[in-house]
Image 1: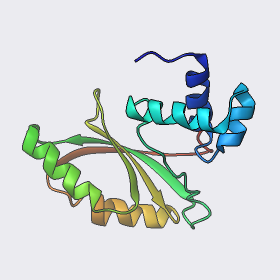
Image 2: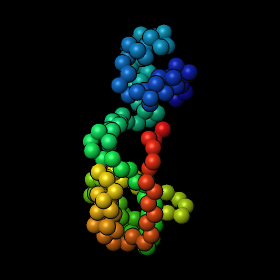
Image 3: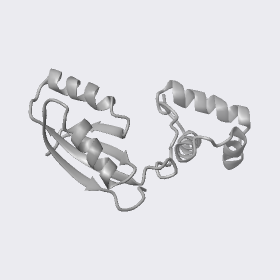
Image 4: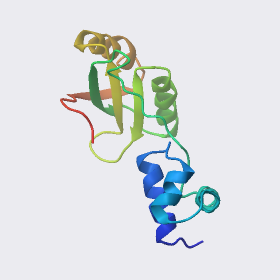
Length: 145
């Protein structure tokens, strides 16, 4: 299915603000609200818009520290990866898990109330997962783009 510049523009605006109204989108492109929603449904059906996400402010929830972990597994293979992914999913402070290529096997984003809380999460939760080899921590200094 091919999409025109209006479809692409609608997708970009929804990406920036998933809460944007059909009226606002229609006004932006000079089309009716019903035409906007037909286009949005077509974008969804084609998989261009796969889901809508909520962006929580971790700091407002009391999580002052964000740390990125590079995790290298000691063991490789489908079962080792699946076991790690299952175990890491059970840690609520781990808010993002990415399987990556490069020096590390996984990149994690961890939120913590402070550095002492992060140390507890790292030592008692993350490092106790069987099969973890090497872990590198990077503390985020500013807000993400």
